[in-house]
Image (cartoon, rainbow, N blue to C red; front, top):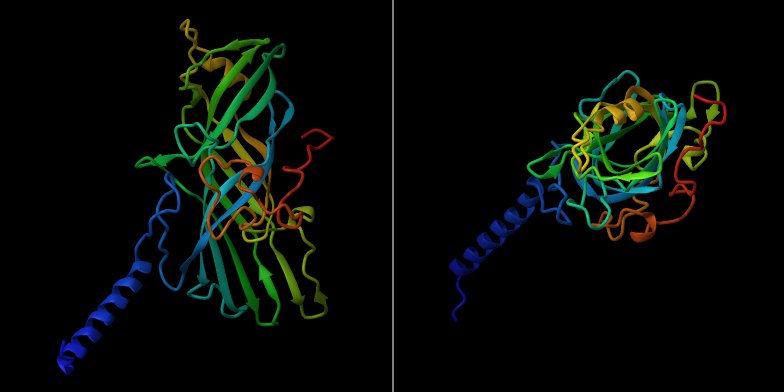
Length: 328
C-alpha cells in the first residue's frame, strides 16, 4: 500500500478525533462499577471525578420514648468521590485557596435483598412499648430511590490554606433523609409476620455536625495537627473519617399489618417514632474499604466481607461511639 501525505494527514485527523472522543468521556457520567450504583457524578469544573472508595461506619442513637440507646453494627458504604479547587474563593481576605472533597455515599445492602445498594445491614432494636410490653424489632435504614437507584447521601469537606500559611478545615453540616424499614418483629417474645411493607410513611431527617480543626501558625503560636484517628478527639474529615454528632427523626410507621390483618403501625409508632433523637456516628477513612479504587461489591455489607483495611487509624475498631453511661 502506497504511503502518501494525504493518507498521513487522514490518519492524524483520525488520531486526534479518537483522543477527543476518549477525553470527552470525562465530561459524561461513566458506568458504575457494580449494578445498583448510580453512574459516576460529573461535577462542574474546576471539580473533577477522583475515584470510587468505600468506608465503614457505626452509630448510636437514643430512643427517647424507651429511654435507651441503640447501637448499630459496623456497616459499609460506597463513595463516589470528586474533588478540586473551590471557585470562587469563599473569603479571599482570609484564605489563599480552598479545596473540597465531596463524596456521594450509598449504603451497601446485605446479600439476598432486593437491592445491591441503598439499604443498611440489619439493626436490632430492643425496647418497651407502652411501658411494659417488650418489643424486639429488626430494622434496616433505606435511602430514597429515583429511577430504581438510591439517592446519594452527600458528604463534603473543605480544606483551606489561610493567609498565615496554616490549614483550616471548617465545621461541616450534613442533612439527608432515610426510611426506617422493619424487617422482623417480636412482641412479648412472640414472632410477628409483618410482610415486607412495614416502614416509615416518609423518610426521617438526619442532621449531623462534623467538627473541623486548625493546624499551623495562628499569629501567636503553632497549633499542632489533631491526633489521629479523628473519632478519638471529636474531629471530622470525609477523607480521614471521624466523629459526627446530631439528631435523627423517625416518622410514623405504616403498612405494618400481620397475616391475620392486625395493623401494628400504631404500636411501632408509639415505641420507636419521634423527632430529634440524639445520634452519634463514627466514620472510617473514605478509602478504608476500597480495593483497587473500587467500592465494596454487592453484598459486602460488613468490613470483613470487603475486606476493609483494619488499621485502627483508618477503621473504627469499636464500630460505633460508646453508649453514654449517664443517660441522654
